[in-house]
Image (cartoon, rainbow, N blue to C red; front, side):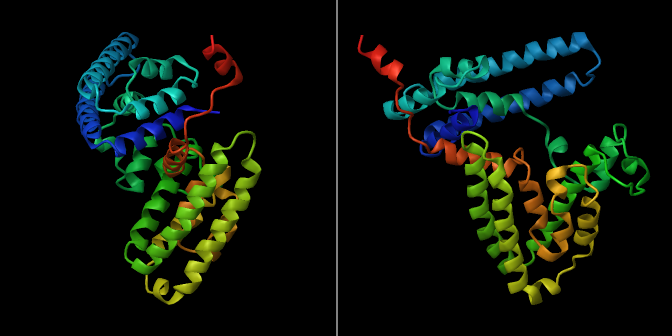
Length: 309
């Protein structure tokens, strides 16, 4: 089964091996995203229905202009083989949104549409601190932690997400100061990412295999922490441990499934917790990379019969 994830991965692959088309794509996406960010700033009140309708109309116009410019500038830049591969895949994905990209006839169209439409300002997309995050969600917090900083029996989903991101950010900063640990953990996660992404891409219900793969990741990061125990002992893990304890109160089941073992596994636990969710950007990116490298699907029996007429 082919999904939009595979189309996006295929487009990324084709752009990587076509520098001229990639440069055009990058420039048009940058201009389109700037226009969308400016548009969102003009229509900042989501309660104004009339304004929101105008926003949708103007957003659609920006996307259409971006796609049209992309088609015009990349005409003839892709080889016939690349276009055939892309076409063979994208025409098998149902839905009007993907259909719009397919109708354009140029690889990269779907990636461009998504990149432009999802544009956010750097101010909104860059994590600064847990305090800033909690301040932003205080009006929607249901557990009280965002406003009072009093630890509840269980964090609400918004606070759970903010705390998890803070833990992962702290872990990345700590690991960055220990090159050997960072290198070894990178190798563990590269293998785990491939395995988890392949499972999520598999047809049918392969979710039962995922915990087993995560357990393999547990063993891997435990091995790294044991091997470099002396180096890790020199690091300041005070904040990392505080956030580890706080994450045990998360409302995200996938995150807390093995929370009691985090102190045993050590560094890498925060990243592993995030990978428990299929929506994690790292998982999504790896799924696109793996699926995008697949060859063109073979024609169905119906297509073979129809092509003979």
